Image (cartoon, rainbow, N blue to C red):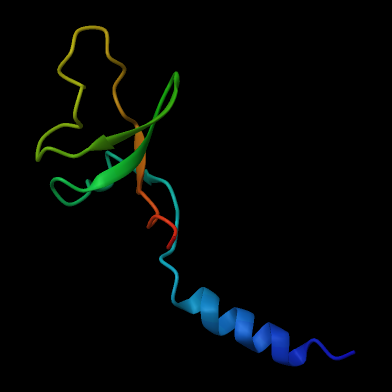
Length: 77
């Protein structure tokens, strides 16, 4: 059974998806008020970029975000 047609369809579908990769905060920051998956030295959380900091970073003892990526689109239900 040939999978050539399946690969083409899969490649076309993948081309429509955004590239998901970690971005260092020192390299670039996200658009304001957009939900992001954020990494700190302690783990991961979803946060919003507020223009000069990630939501929650101003709280005492809250770890600083080192990397982020845009949150994926929710599934269609």
